[in-house]
Amino acid sequence: MVEEIRGKLSSLLSNKNILHCVTSSVSLYRAIDIARFLIRHGANIIPVLSENASKLVSPYLFEYATGHKPISKITGKVEHTMIFDEHNIDLLLIAPCTANTLSKIANGISDSTVTLFASVALGRKIPILIMPAMHLPMYKNEIMRENIERLKSFGVNFIEPIIEEDKAKIADENAILYNILKTLRPKPLKDKKVIVTAGATREYFDPVRFISNPGSGKMGLAMAIAAWYYGAEVYFIHGDLRVNPPNFLKTFYGESSDDMANIALNLLKKDKIDYFVSAASVADFKPVTKAVGKIETKKVEKLTLELTATKKIIKLVKEESPETRLIAFKAEYGLNKDFSSLISEYEFVDYLIVNDVSRSDIGFASDYNEVIFAVISKKLTKSIGKMRKEELAESLWQTILSYEQKI
Image (tube, rainbow, N blue to C red; front, side):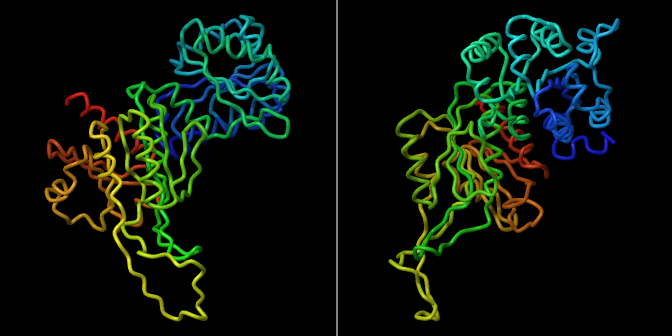
């Protein structure tokens, strides 16, 4: 049953072995969904239950969900040391983590399965990711804050809970995935600052009507998130989105092409930006004039709009900050265009990524994309086959950074 779902959503965690430790927080009912979600992204999940957790949820459910019999007791096999070698563990995830377990780990107490595994992981320098879940006063008390900071000083990472209804609730599955990737991935973009644009712009011709396009923001968001877990500080400028950006990105809403351009230029003026990723679906044209009030069909039966070209944000970016490496996405309707002429047209960018929006199975609102990647200075192109946008974003950053090292 497990192999039927492994990698169904992506291969982002392929070949990663994760110890999923579960404590007796009320949120533990979410643990099975978390385990299955990570398996769908390719992970191998080995469950470890505290004694109280195994009383609240049947260990058989975890065995069914993960394909591994959960460890809820330490026997003569010395599971808390044996498992690390047997499965070549990449990460220890405690989700959910009670206040009791968190505090014990912070103070070196190893009197349960979960605290024993955490103690060994700390000694072996294996990454630990903790997701606290408890009542808000417990999470906010000074002793708890000190224990969290103490663990952070030892290199332990945390997934911030969702604060609502006077509780620190367990984060959603996507936040868990992103934090696992940030913990496990190398940091080639550490100390780098990246701007990513995404989503469709709106160009109004009256106060309530506008010209736009089907851009969803999925590709741009994937590029922003991948840059974040590769270590970058990310500024995310977006128009209309069909996906919600996570709170670890510094977000800015640019409704129109002018709005997006102004936000980008202001950021470039204030700070040194290393990479600018232009993935937004910026409208190519906008109305020359905008009506003061709503245009009524009972008064206007036929409407003619005069349009003018919008600003080319990527050109403005390069003029403002020539040293910023410019990565531009280009939507083509069919890929019959001579790429040598396309490269000449975009000679001011550093990397050009072209996708075919005439296809319904990739681009725009799709979860998938297939692109042609061009290194403008070398007049080199390579095809990158169809894959999920999250995986493509990683592939693109890896490709870009490999060329950066050669320059």
